Image (cartoon, helix red, strand yellow):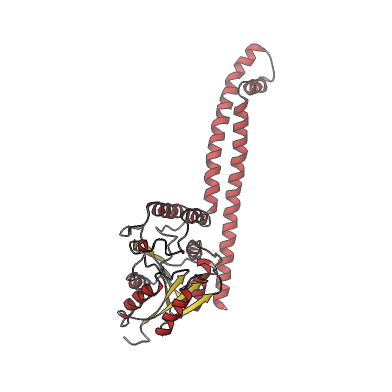
Length: 345
């Protein structure tokens, strides 16, 4: 295969305070890519996101020794979202592969994702440990459970169903990923990419992946780049809101409406039943229903309060659901239009 016919791959490695593993893991990636040179042309782009340790110095040393490795330094820590955007802007390959420098997804995922991207004519390929055929090894129990549940909640919220929305290890077509106007600074960038890709009707494909923390656990306490588990969980929950915000309001509104209807229907039933009691006490009265309603209020004032408050709250949440649905549609139309203009420019 001539060099012009080979796929050109850029492996993007965002790094922050990774001096403990950077050299060994980059060498492992290089060794793997060299075995695939008959199939791919390649480069490695290390994005040093303002590391406070010797990560930048080590990365520069590796780059000086290997012509196919480039390094870009952020002067300050700008977080994962900005690091990925820097990688997307500066990568030269036609296909961009994002790996976690801890290699919790082994290097053979590179070939599997790239081949799937090409064979399926996809825009994004996601390495998914949570789909059928995927596997998770040695990940701490709390972190694993929280990650699984965040992705399940996103799956319920999203219109297009995938198993992994938060994972960083992916392959992208360069021309596609550069059309996305990404705003998120931190780890929420990965769900943002999914959401905006769905708006543009991108072809997104998942492959079974093996998430293995066996090697990473050896460096416990030596790395400072791990996300706080609780913070990551709640940021993931908030990220699920972007897919279909109206279903959250609609769900709460429906529950409140059901509660209010339960209270108010029983109140109506007791009021109608009490009309006979009122007529027996005051024969010929013209306001039997009103007097029966007053009687019910004296007996059970809490029914009026609970039923009325929940009914008003239900109306408010249902109104918010409608407004958020309209707002979502307006945003998607504007984003689609803006992307089309950006492509033409």
